[in-house]
Image (cartoon, rainbow, N blue to C red; front, side):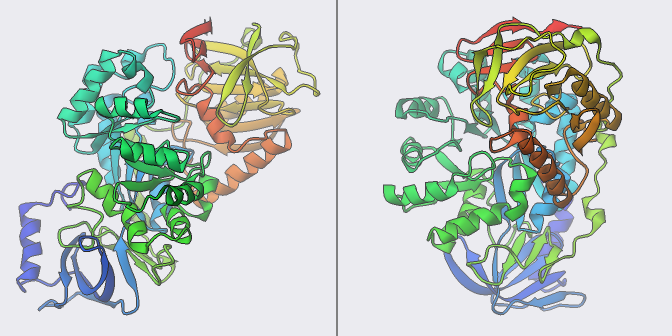
Length: 582
């Protein structure tokens, strides 16, 4: 493949045709395969010819020349298109490289991905280069065009501007705008965002909504304003509402919203029988949630719910490809498509026994046969390295004041409360479920201090460079242990650190831009579980502490957030008190 996005050269296309004309041998032939014909919505038996990374023929015939051709008999096996994840956040402690390698073993080979983190780590030109070059991996990555930061930034124009939106939309790797967390602004008259949405539509690209709890009226209004799809339905009725509004619906099964089993059951009760405008997403789940599977796990749930296997497999392949206008490349076992193929021992078992990605074996007869060289990626060459923290915390940084703190309602919802402790003390009493909370600029220029209630009752020192914007979150009951955790984070160049009585209890090192590990998903799952267990032992009681860290600053969620600009009241859309320059 000459171009990552599968624009083959004329010479390559001539060779592909030469295989059909009997002048050249294919590189691989899968014989006697029962494959999912998505055009007919039925299982068909055929031979599949592949030349390098492209399917060149599917039918009854065998090639005239087979010198050097690998021939694999798939009698009794089933072939389906590689799975597509339509809504991915590939920087959730893992990274695109580690996520794709893990997911390929389970059959997911194409990702529609958020580029949010890239916008904070590099200029737009470097971000575009990254978004293209990551397609050197065996998987394919396509991307979004973000319109807003989901938080209050001190210099938002540096990240989201007419120029940056235009450049993103010009990229063939960017397939949609959004996700549109700032939809209330659009609905209430923000013409800058609406202008960017119109540019997205003029570029022939989709807009992904983010419409939790939206009424029929709101769904209709957002459809009129250009939204094409939404992944926030939490009941079968909400799925029906979105379908009736003309939206594509992405059913979610994630670490903070594992709704899929309930949704499928309630959709059946609603009488939904046509799944052509529906697909499924794990919505950027944290590593431990993927231990049981990625797209294959959602397929397992769908099949257990009684869906016809044809409908289920099309929901994670052809439906997605067709929606994004990529069905000429993905989502079909047909000539001309990229050779992303999953081989199943039974249609009721969606975990592939063998996987082809771009025509190369990634998994064979249940064993990982991928090549390390295929997954090499030049992180430093793309400007992603350890977080360099060249500044120190000072005594005045530990001055906490103010009457309004942040109370956790669940993993991601926070609300204001009246602080009851003495914020000037060195340590908060063990009987209280309150902790000091600091958000401090990754370059040490500003800070905002408050108190958080309900995060963890016995957490003494905690520091994280994993956050919404890459700035540092420091939490704890003991100012001394908070400083210990910060010093360790500084020493390792980014990560999540838990300290207690001067000792490091648990940590996840995140040497890639302070937000990503360079470990495999399997190794990262162990570290995440260890950290989560330590937090639970100290009083964390909600579903997902990693998402709690991510969403402390996220102003698309109610009701109060700690941001670069200060403590922000989401409902009133104003600051309760501002950040302080250091």
